[in-house]
Length: 151
Image (tube, rainbow, N blue to C red; front, top):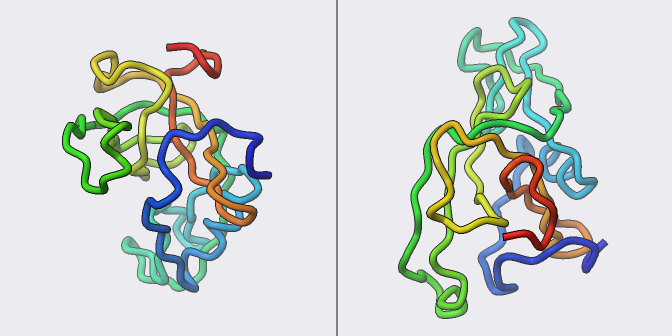
């Protein structure tokens, strides 16, 4: 439901591209569920979702639900707005997060709810959802244990 979650980015951010392979991911996100694609043959996980397992080349997969926690694998601080509406948002953090239970898969998202200078490799994070519309929610990550509105 729009309005039930905090907003970090402006409405004119380009919407993410969806296709047949990513539809299950976006459906889970809309329901505020963090998932990763897992091969039904060898168990390898992958993100972003794809049509073929990169390990064993099988085309069948399932969605494995994750607990919504993880660690920052790497990150960068964006200091220049690529859209005029982002001028009030910079600086912000783009991070590769290794989700707990994700089997080594990594998700690129943002670390929110803290000063960008606080972010570090290995930082423990938890998912927070940004509702962008009635059928689109994006996972962001904040420092684990941080309450909404805390800085």
